[in-house]
Length: 318
Image (cartoon, rainbow, N blue to C red; front, side, top):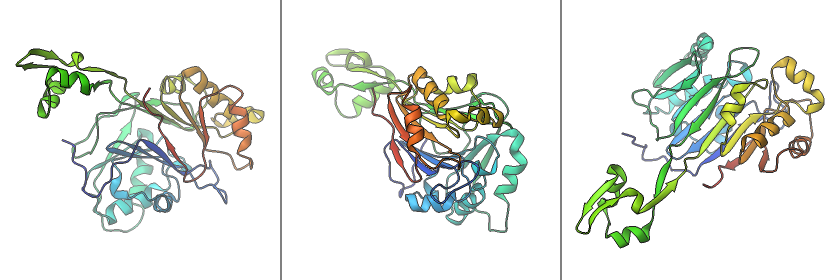
């Protein structure tokens, strides 16, 4: 049963960009790092160097974290794990925090989690991925009903993208509930059991509610275009995706296992993505507007060219 620490404030569904640089940080862009607030879940993706300090600037406590997800073990996506884990220990975070990562990177993850001397109070569960599929839950983990899935990407070493899917549900109609004479705890019983016997007869859940499609989020970092990119992005409400290069440097993108802004925006446009967040920019570019102009040639939805400490709300339900 999920129990949230008393001091953890429930946030709206939003992404916080801790850092938006690629391999080399710049004066204005920290190494990678992203925190997704999703109801009761607070997931830290790809904590690059400096993530602990960026969390401080963003007002995000290590105690709030419920999971860490790493796409691959290049330094700009993982060096910050050491500091974050030590902060989790220092703050005596009570919940078990799963750390999911490509299984081939286990020795690096273990080294980062034990890189210097400190008093170990952290409760981590290391989960190495070796195949596509749903990421399993672990005992002591705090989580909501959304399901996290991973798919193998195409980079210069083993890398996975992630997708979070909320199950479809139903929205109660207060007028129809009142008409059926259902109030208080009976509303919860009807939602859980699907039917409720009342003095007026049997009421079905579908009689007093309407369908509520679940929302979804995808996180795609270092990769060439591949089937997994399309699968992860299909129909999501928000897609956070690397756009390391501009299209004029597409050859470099291909050679180094990355995407261009045009490729990322094309995926979003053709996949029905509602909110597109471009990030992971090469230091060779100094004008973020170039990424927006390139993406806008093919994508007309909500677009964010991410800057450090940006907060981007997940779009409201359809």
